[in-house]
Length: 95
Image (tube, rainbow, N blue to C red; front, top):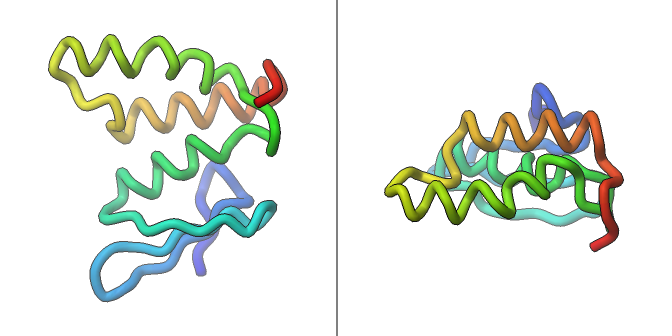
């Protein structure tokens, strides 16, 4: 398995079609159809378990706005920003 470049506890491996993605802290695994799915999983798992980070808080507001504007709320650049904010501020609130 390969380690995600920005979220070190997220690992992924290529399957015949898509990817298996795993959070090594929690053991949670998921299927990602493409690279944007890997980024979305990493974004959702970039804060500490049981906590929401700043990136999660921003995404709560930004994703519905992006959808309303006809944009893809799960785009790779958005997920990367969410990851970065969560890694910088991982304990903004408890989930």
